[in-house]
Image (cartoon, rainbow, N blue to C red):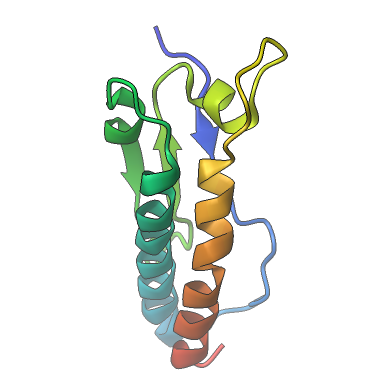
Length: 114
């Protein structure tokens, strides 16, 4: 049975129109910054058994779909990320990783010409 998951979605699109020849480069920039986000988030991910850190679904961007996503699949991931009213402190591991990887995305898009 699937439970709640943590998902980081980029909602600010600073490139309103990407020309077809730029789409492949933009997808590569999204994928590189997404993997950097995971690299920054993993050390911040709470570890007891290692299941939360080790159970992710990664969907890479492509020229046809400029969307990168990473979902932490353990049911308790959302409680580790957001905290609980019963004393589990919020770690915001995915959000912190995303914020730290933002310069990677900006640099990658600038290299494409965005």
